[in-house]
Image (tube, rainbow, N blue to C red; front, top):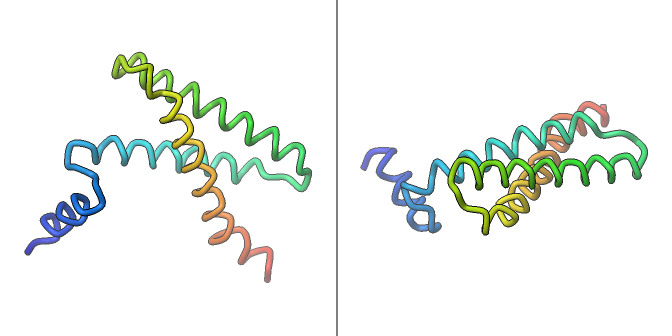
Length: 107
């Protein structure tokens, strides 16, 4: 079996169809961009970081509403997409922090 067939079979097993793959890939890509921005804006002040997280959630929500309303004409699930986008951004920022920043600081 070729790699593409194995990949498609694995995506079907976890519940992602071939038609939904570009949507998930786009969501993760936007989450990576927002997460990298969150990582670059980290400071030692907890309140500033909380403010940056709030701004990141608002950006994710506006981005999802823009994508949902103007591109796909679907407003009802835009808030949920914004929540998923924000959670993906926070997870990716934490992953980048552990993989890149923490080993540099620990040395």
